[in-house]
Each structure stands twice: as C-alpha cells, then as structure tokens.
Image 1 (cartoon, rainbow, N blue to C red):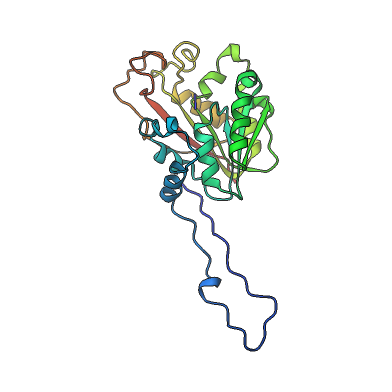
Image 2 (cartoon, one colour):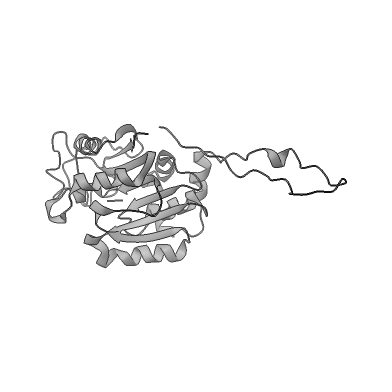
Amino acid sequence: MRSILMAGLGAVGVLAAGFSATAAPASAEALVPQAVPPAADLAGAAMADARRPEADRARDDLRQTRAMLEFTGLRPGMAVADIRPEEGFFSRLFSAMVGEQGRAYAFVPNQTAARENAFGDALAADYPNVVRLTGKLEEMAFDRPLDVVFMGEEYHDFVIPRFGVDVAAMNAAVFAALKPGGLYVILDHQAADGAGISVAGTLHRIEAAELRRQVEAAGFIFDGETSAVRVPADDHSLSVFDASIRGRTDRFVYRFRRPG
C-alpha cells in the first residue's frame, strides 16, 4: 500500500453588536487570535483519539505514525484525500487532525470498490467529516480544493499494467484537485536502484527515483522527504509480503507541491 508545514490561525473573539454605557469592555484575550497547536500536538491528539482501533495503535511504532502525520502538514480546517485508504489507518488520523471544520475524503478506486467501499462507508459512519468517494483514479474530483493528497503504499499498484491505470492522467487529476501550494504526499516500498517499475507486480516495490520522475512530469515540485520509515537493512530483493520482512520494509516518503 497505505519540510514545509502549513499553519493557520484559529477563531478570534468578537465584540457584541451593541452595549450599554455600563457594559464591561471586551477582554484583551478575546481579541487575540488563538494559535493552532504545533504539528506534534495535533499528531499526538490524533493518535490518542479514542475511536482508533487497538490494532491501529499496535502498528504505530512500525509505521512511525507521529512523524508521518507531522510530515503531511495537516491542520484544522484543511481538506485531505486518502487515495485507496483500505481499512482506513490513515483516514482516521487525518479526520482527527483536520477536525470538525475540515474534510477527509476516502477515495476508493473502481478497481477495488467491491471489497473496499464497505471500509469507506464504515469510516464515514464513525467520523462525520469523512466522505467516501468511488471512481476512476484518472478522473478523481472533489467538492472543494484540497490541501493534501495522500497515497500510502498504493502507487506501486497503480503502475502494474493489469490494474489498468493511466498513471500520468492520475497524477494530473491530483494536480487539478489540489490548491496552488497544496501537497501530494506519497509513501511506498523502495525497489533496488535501477529497478524502475519492473518489480511492482512481483515484489510490490517501486524505485523512488522513477516515482519522482513521474510525479514531477505532471508539474509538481519536489518538496522534501522524511527518513522516518527507511530501513537500511532491507536489500530490496524480497516481496513486501515475505514473512521475514513484512511490515519492516525500506520505505520512502516523498512530498511534492503544486506550484502557486
């Protein structure tokens, strides 16, 4: 499968429309904008959300969840799309980070809808700000411009010929869905240098350099990476489903920015 941080300001206090001569003046505190919590605080609160399944919590160390969330730059009020969220590990966290005024889209590709629509519907039932959408990856569209698009350990599947995805068109659709300055964050399993996409269908890996080339061809600007889930001991020769390495593969996380 599945830095530059955006910041925002919270609500400010407002003065009453009318007041009497004896009314108390508005406090200075009410007029000062309330700062958004630091990324680490938002990530920690999302991870501690009581709605998260215990099975998700058990995977936090291997997935380096806190570092991953901080790297996305998500803030309250933002809109984020999780592409092929499957059971919803990241969608749950994104929902908590963007909060009641934000929106988290669980986008299920047509190719996996028969199995995975039910996962998206369950997410939407538990999290009021989650919306499940299903459609073609090449034509994905949303009812508001997005701040972040996230793809977790899925991009390598989309380049496999039998999956039938026009990857260039998919990346163009992501570009169109994002606000200027919006982020495209991709997590995937690293293949050996020079492998390109040749082992995507067998080892379920993709070479990071090839993925970067494809995404930049859509007009994105490379915006950084995190080494949080790199595993130097992985020699990239085994399938990610091999029992000796499953859950502990060498993974790269790239962030791209739509210019503007």
